[in-house]
Length: 327
Image (cartoon, rainbow, N blue to C red; front, side):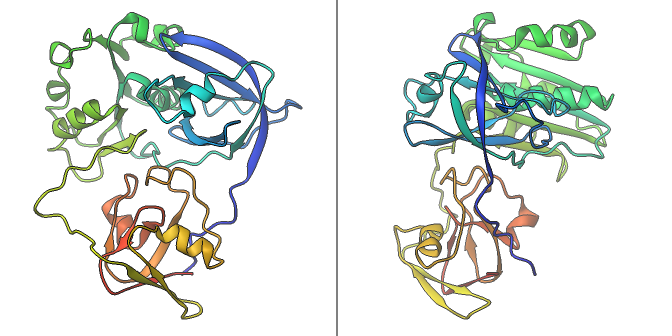
């Protein structure tokens, strides 16, 4: 098997061409090549890493149409209670240079869907807007539902006007009380054959969508977290109380991964070039294959089929014994 370990992610130095206030606390940033050359292609749902002046690296979804090869557009909500990433982005100005990764996608549109339902909560609208553009370009059947507190919090309002007039885009305001808003459960009560649902937003919204789509068929529900959700221990969870051994299949070398240290860090320290980014199982940068062993998957991107052969080295751990890696 070929390893999924890749060399260091290729980066680009782009210039901030325009900063636009899209809604309360939300700016969009248009990034272009300084020489105005074409940028690497992307598909709807893709994100880029932004290397910020304060040393932080953050992931943001691309919100523009994949047809637009001349620019990347991201939307960023300034979170005063965050880790400093969004605040650093909000300090960028037109003319500033930023280093970004090539686009990566863990949230692809399903090519065989006969209809797509897009659910966006707050700033989770960014990947959904790109999906809307891609579906429009393909003349595919879709509907987009955008949930937020009020009109002043609704980003990209002008770009949604055509879709609203056509009855494809629906904006729902709840005044900050989700129970008073549009019912996601009612929307997803029926699960038509060939229909797929996609959702992205804050933790409470994600949980509501998860419950509402619980009866949909396997492989028809897709989602992306933009922040790792809090874990709630349950009686059925496996608790890893000790370290484990990671065995390199190509050499037979065995590496101890102690409790409190990530597999990615151990591999990097031993000379194996594992690229990392989010460090929380959200971006897929550090995904690698494993050949044997039982894995405690802690990521938010791999589906059940992928978990049978892949793991994210930043958060996944061996449950016991030896974990054989395809390296």
